[in-house]
Amino acid sequence: MTDGSRCAIEFHMVPVDEIVRIAAVFAHIEWPLTSDRIDALVSALGWTRRPHATGIRLSTNLPVNQQRVFVSAPDGNLEEIDCYVSDFLPDGSDLLGTDVDKSSVVSAFTVVRQSLSDVYGAWSSHRPGDAWWDLSTGGRLRLSGDGLVLALRILSHRYADVERAEERLGISPDRVLGEDE
Image (cartoon, rainbow, N blue to C red; front, side, top):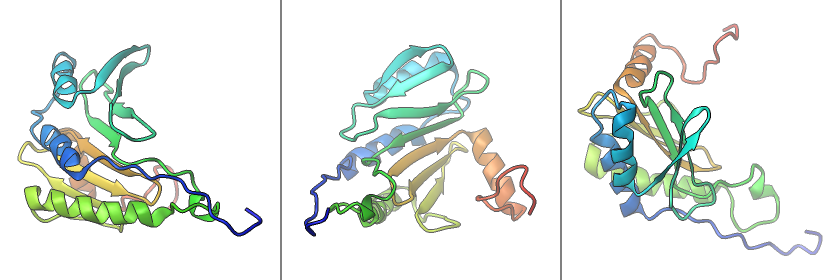
């Protein structure tokens, strides 16, 4: 904007108590989560399952601008669920003359991380904007706040075991397969 004024963009985040409720549903999943049990999970969350040619497509009714749920189900069993619990900011929004910047996501991350820690105990992390909790089910609950969006992710027992093995071996979570180290 050439006149120096700032454009007001609202930043929406799911209420913290609702994020904690979603995490509780995730935390009690028994693995493997077979396709015949997915509908019960969707119902408990108040989400919607839509038919899709490539497999499972879920969407939330959360008050954010991206309601699609990212799902990994390579063999028909759910292995990873990733949903946004804040608005997704366009990359560079802090440079576009708006009142919303990446600090909104970072602040939300800190508040939600503390609320989840109150329930699941001490969190672990390898980098800023990332926290996880290993669950009694063998799965892993992850909160990510990369500056563009706040996301809640659940990893199956199998996927969490892969992450734990990589951590023990000192493999960076930022490593990209196929790139020379």
